[in-house]
Length: 527
Image (cartoon, rainbow, N blue to C red; front, side):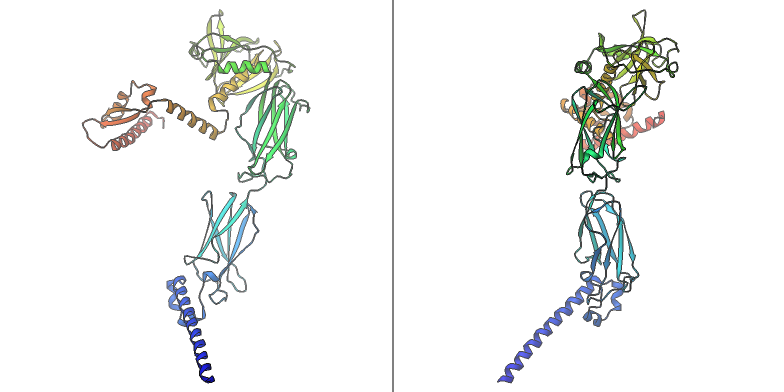
């Protein structure tokens, strides 16, 4: 009886081991058929299947040459250790079909990689090198024969580098600020690293030590002012990578400011500041908000070459308020003169002129017999028109302003109300382009204004009958008397003597009209 029970037990154990062996063998065969290249299957035998003598992605390992998180901009590398199913090293010099894909999770940016087989004693290591320049979370996928290696995909975090002054910028930057004496103004600074990533990695943990501000009063002698002239404070938000510089000036006048990081100026940290009193601020706001009335200032026109060697000094106070001359905006911009760009004759004594500021133009005019206007210079109210602020002139002791647009010769003017004149021009420019000189801010302002105008217009349909053979001429004839409201409507295009689907006709007419317009402009030499 004892022998019978022992024999049955041995048979059951042997049966279970046999079943386990068969399952393991079947699993290895299936895994081999899935992972092994078809060209190399003929080189394997059933003995290789049984021993696990084939490359298995799950048996491979990945090691990293850095610790998370790591800064961007450095050459990174990780190693893929190849192994057979039985745990023996797999020679990496043989073609294995290793595929590596690295992608930024949020921005969907693919990173190029390079592979290198390391000549180690086992020669089963493939080194993968890459470089990332955008901070964030990356997905690293490693595959062999279409299957993930080890625990692929992996997720790695790369943080931005140190703050670089040449990449750091002021948000909503403008070349000239108009401030009120004694009132606080906040500048928003976005620190950036070498690859334009927002960063908060500073040399010093206290931003008050990192960012410095120097202010010089504009004039013949630009000496750095004392601490009594202005007050500043720096507050940072490291989570949003933003720095707020609060500035308060206590003296009226024109100044030049420079913001530096670790004694190096930031990208757009150089700008001018016009500081007005409360009364002057109200005058400027009234000038900008008034429409249909031309704002003019009495000034004296100088020959720029006559006083280049004259020593000027900046007076301590600024006087007066702007004057108004009733006239329409059309008269301000389109008064008759023999030549709008005619340069006045060079004179030794300053010539009395009148400077008109409108939302679109800055013009300098002279009056003959006090009633006949003669336009001497005209400048557009745009960022290309630059002002330079000098001290008092040698004759009338009035503050001087040099206007230059890069096209006409610079115009040198001395005006009793120079600061109000310049502030009116700057505020009009701010109003025209949305308060910032950066390109993206201008685009956002234009799109916002366009949507507002479009919402105010009716969106009913207007029917246009055009000819396919004379599309451009018939389209111009059909829209000749259109008003602004008509141009805002939806066009329903119908080809004469043709029947077709409305949407197809509309699309076809748009394509043909654009093509005809390009050909027309090309013939005129405008393209």
